[in-house]
Amino acid sequence: MQPAMFGIPFYYTPVNGVVRRAHAADPNDPRPPTWGCGPISTEGWPDPSLGSPVILMIDRGNCSFTTKVRNCQNAGAVACVIVDQSGIPRGSPLPLMGDDGTGKSITTPSMIIHQADGQDIYDVLSTTQDVLLQLTFTLPNPDGNVQWEYWTSSNDPPPSNGHEFKHTFGQAAKLLDGSHTFIPRYLVIDGAWPGYNCVHTGRCGKQCTNDGRYCAVDPEGDLRTGLDGEDVIMENLRQLCVYEYLNATNQGAKWWDYVSQFTDLCSKSDTTWNATCSNAILTSMQLPFNTINDCIARSGGFGPNVNTKLAAMISLRQIQGIFKIPMLVVNNEIYYGSMECPTPIQFATCGPLQAICAGFAPKTQPPACTGDAGCPIGVKRDACAVCGGTTTDAAQCNPEPPHK
Picture 1 (spheres, rainbow, N blue to C red):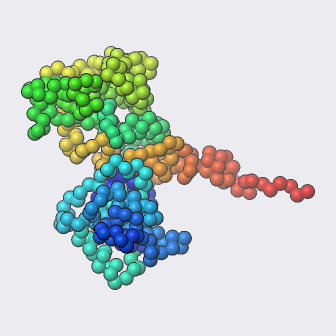
Picture 2 (picture 1 turned 90 degrees about the horizontal axis):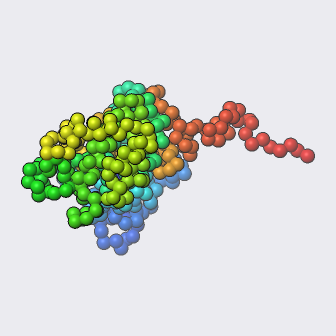
Picture 3 (picture 1 turned 90 degrees about the vertical axis):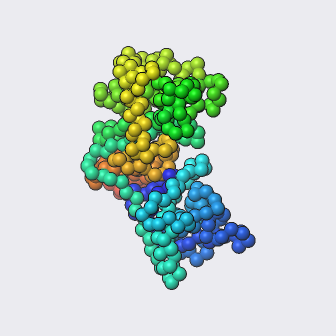
């Protein structure tokens, strides 16, 4: 099985449900009814009020994964299982359930399974409707400290929500501080990859640094004007060095403040996307920009030779299998799910926070992982169900007015 790269997996509670196979609600829909590319019929589904949620199985084909899962969500299923139809043998890699750019509103967890596994379930369904399925999403949780890596760029491309995530998730990251190891990683394109052939050739121009070794996509998609890929690479390296200094001085949480301010103050124009704007932010944060610049120089700078930090990003990207940004890696496992974390941040609606918290060993979760539903992160309800309240005796809640 392979989880989708959208929706919110349930890491703490297994998903249990009665299995149903998708069937089109419109009998005139010319597409196979099990594809789930249009509204899905709920005829024959158990009454959800009786505590019998449905896990819906949909065949792969004809429309995007997000379309299928959205229709599954609209039908009221608690989870969705896509059954591959390509005949890939068990044990072989399955296709990634990528977001087509419309998955922001999807919260229902989903996954894809091999065709043979799906057929086994279909065979049982053909003899009885009483098939129960349990889906469990897990991450390694060896101890009380989670290492998580956030793959990003100083120029998160659309439809990525990277800028928004950096602004909002810093609040949660600060509540995790002291019980986790956070490391930002930066997407760098290898100029030596086949098809690029940028190294020593000059053919990639200002989209690369270090004689064509380290490249980024032109931010505006216009090679003639505005920002260039080299601007992105230079700021990526600067942000790596900002993190190095902050981490060495036990101020790692301030990385979120720097990258958010750079987005707000420097990234709007090619006239402000530069070291001068960055240094102004560092000064306002009382951080030594000379130390940051020394880090850039020590790593190899932007001259004709190798830069050790940028080269390390290329190597690690290949090792971890990073193919897009933003991406989250928790305890060396890629998190597959939505990177949405709407404000106000709540544990129940922030998939990345759930993934990080799932990486802690039992009974070692920090406050950010223990808040109650509907409350801000880290905040629990009192006996009167008030977020952050102090009442311990339910008898004191909403007392009736005295009788006249």
